[in-house]
Length: 364
Ligand SMILES: Nc1ncnc2c1ncn2[C@@H]1O[C@H](COP(=O)(O)OP(=O)(O)OP(=O)(O)O)[C@@H](O)[C@H]1O
Ligand SMILES: [Mg+2]
Image (cartoon, rainbow, N blue to C red; front, side, top):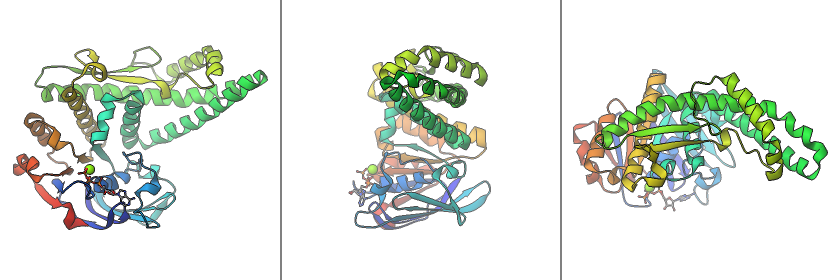
């Protein structure tokens, strides 16, 4: 998969961008605040996912403008395609001239793996960041998963509303139980997909980390399904267990006015030599672990779909030591990569690859 061209009108500070990247490594360089991350963000939005900056759609429209317009021509599945994204109060996608009812339908059409300083949160921050990472990675592989997550969240919101109502009026308790079945059904699908994905990611990321750290520590991932570490359960078993746990926890949930178990509360841990990377890892170890997870995500995508994802590396290259830089470079082969940096010299090690350098001033 690769980007053939990107055009932007009034997207953040990019009032008129015309960008035709090369097929290999594209280095976008320039001083702070010129729009390098904005360009990366613009490409990312075509995955159909929300901005990695968790920005509201409206914030991405150039201040003073009414709307932003992005056009992406990309090559995937052995053919060129044209996608457009119009941002006003909402996001409007079209693919080859056909209007799509929502961003989710872009998933599976265009895919990226992004690694920015914000993605260090996957290792450093709380469980929510890791769940988000998993959900985005799986959604790009299996667009139907994104639908399941959406439906799960809808049912969860209904059950939580019923819990709050039943707290006021105990006669409404039976309404809460009405939601248990659909919640367990969607939740079990999510848990099964996450466990399967994590099993593969675990293997890949461990191999990659081993090389990055020259074998000094081992990376491993664990998925805690309501305090149980098991990867072999099938979706029906998981659903039965979820149903039992929901029933058993109903009083506690009523007390808290919120559902206390399910995929929205689960944690997968990143461990280095058996201990939590979040709690005990050094800065460099945490960075390597996040990088290993991202490179593993890209490798798995290629393995499953037979198509290389577009790789977006924002501002991370200068922070890596020469050994890690070299390692990342090795992974670039056969992929289109976008790297942003302030100082072009920091990517000179890429000299023997297919590198094109774009000063951001020349693009806007
Ligand atoms: N909606 C918007 N309208 C106009 N300008 C915006 C908007 N949103 C952000 N900007 C501007 O975009 C610029 C930031 O761009 P970006 O984050 O891409 O910079 P960068 O080149 O990545 O810088 P750095 O090297 O510091 O990471 C800022 O000057 C900011 O004011
Ligand atoms: Mg930036």
